Image (cartoon, rainbow over all chains, first blue to last red; front, side, top):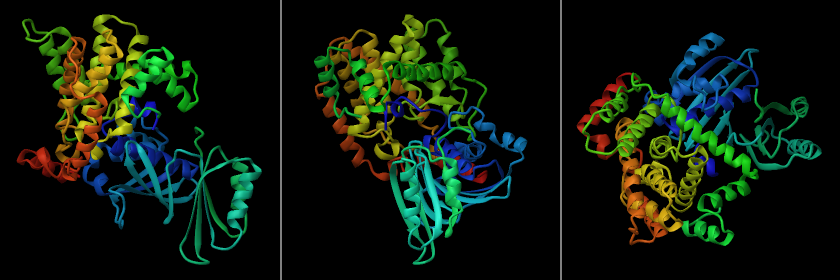
Length: 221
Length: 291
């Protein structure tokens, strides 16, 4: 927390968790997709579902999916902008087990047909946690450039990824490893102190045993 | 953030022979690794955003729940009346506080200070002062650093979220921050600044967070008015020479302990207090029908 979390942030109301945090969940998901979103199914859970209407949570998530940030004045009219952009929207209730009370499940399809499923949590203030990507644990904040690598659980993949980062002189801020079972699906979630070059991200995606590479950049656009 | 106590700020101000606000700015420069200009310009951005939010109040707007909107205009009309009881400054503070709270509920752009629910308190006190006393924008930005310093200590010691410490942590913190900032503008010394904050916070201790239907509307919006007026009267007491009998840092520590004792049902869960009154339940049921 810094000084401008005390006086600030500038945001569209009414709630830092249910509005500003919800925009951020949408925004990070849009960045994770890496291309404009053609279709979004937004399923809300817990307090997001119960009080979301009064807090504009649906508008907020859609605004984020369109690339808007929490201070964007167009947030209340985001449905109109989604229609103009040709983004198809579906809303429902999320059937999640033991999720954070402010959770949203976003099932997304990009303009190229790329698919992505994100579970995001608004954890207080306007802080968020991306809890899952494509059904696999992720747990990152969106405050750092973040590399998410899904791979077959076999030796060497962590070394491949971390060697690449070392080669590019990128310091790792946090690193998490998950797997479904021995030899099953595994995931690395790496928050970095600086941006990872896109060609390096693409290079990783071509390695054998790596099934999907998702990169969250703090760069605009 | 390196301030755990208000006395730390005062001590640094004395040691470095700079004013209260400047200690807070120097700390921000160090924490975020930014220049003096970058820090100060960022504060000006916050101040200007507050001003824009105040100017763009729309009396016709209503919140999605239908509970909020239009009261700012009522206070505006009251302010225009002759022979009203209270003075020009206080009545405009009230008007600006409720307007900002309503704008927030109606999804307009505001500055969380320290939270969205309490966003009306600090701008009401400072923007009214800026307009009526014709002081420079720089001076108001300095006062915002004073407010931020007090807020940092509260955040580090206690809490600034209703879910954590009840409404005392939101409107209470905002009120203490505004009281200190106004005392600075009125020429108060460092001791007067922190005692104004303490006097203000003492009036807010124990305040719970029991919003109707879980929305940042009832009682939050009108409580911005009380928080702002409380800041003004506390500041006036400090300027008049009145001191808090309890040391300011001890008041903040009390707030922390009280916050921990407030049961969860009164910390932004809407399971007790105002939120379960028949009036509130009627609203909640109506809104659930349109979920």
